[in-house]
Image 1 (tube, rainbow, N blue to C red):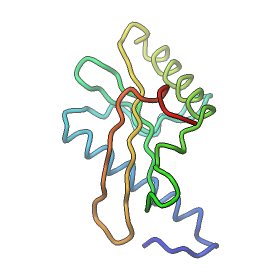
Image 2: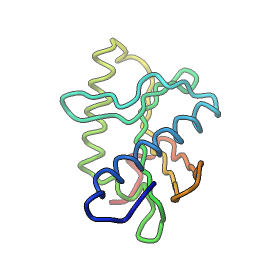
Image 3: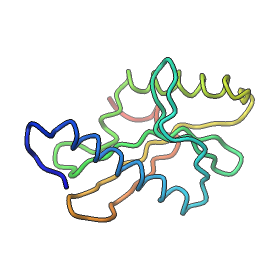
Image 4: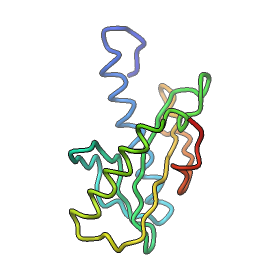
Length: 133
């Protein structure tokens, strides 16, 4: 399913990302979250998942990797990405008349190796501003 061929790299990355988002959504739903939106687009970018965790809106950035050999998935969320996520989150809240709602930004890292039907999932709650990078 996932090949390392140069010609298929874009398709592979997109397929891997979709698989990671699917695994992250299932994992979060299994822990009581409700998925409100997937791949929410706005003028500032995209939110992978918008969820509700009890009384809180949660904007979720999903990072999927096949291995942690080079770096942890969440380490790829740099300052520029964090700023875009914040802008997207604020846009979402304003567009849905929810500016008074409590919210947070989570990062979900997924390790999805080739040939596995599932993967390892780790949720870093409300961590987007505490991470290095």
